[in-house]
Length: 103
Image 1 (cartoon, rainbow, N blue to C red):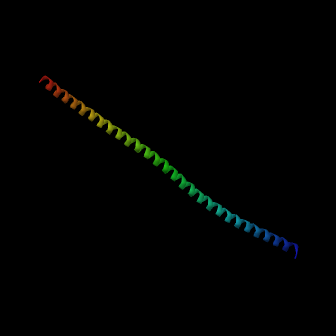
Image 2: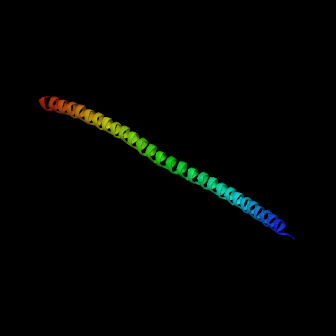
Image 3: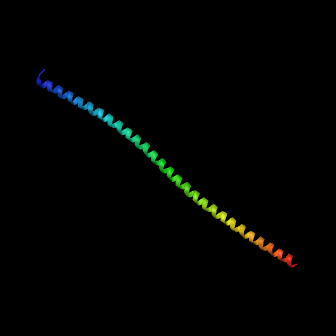
């Protein structure tokens, strides 16, 4: 084997090694990309779930405040009506008692 043939074999072997390294690197890059995409989807799903939980909690709080305020207004109206009825009954009883006393 002469010098030229040895150099050609060495060049061919180097090119073959380079191609193998490139194939392995591309495979590794594809695996890393796939893992990154899967992790991105997982993080996105968790983020959406967390946002929905926060929004849901806020909506429940607003709902509870609105319903609580309406219930409070309703109780206030009932108390005012009771007070008015009691005042009218008291006035009527007072009038009846006066008429009984006056004869």
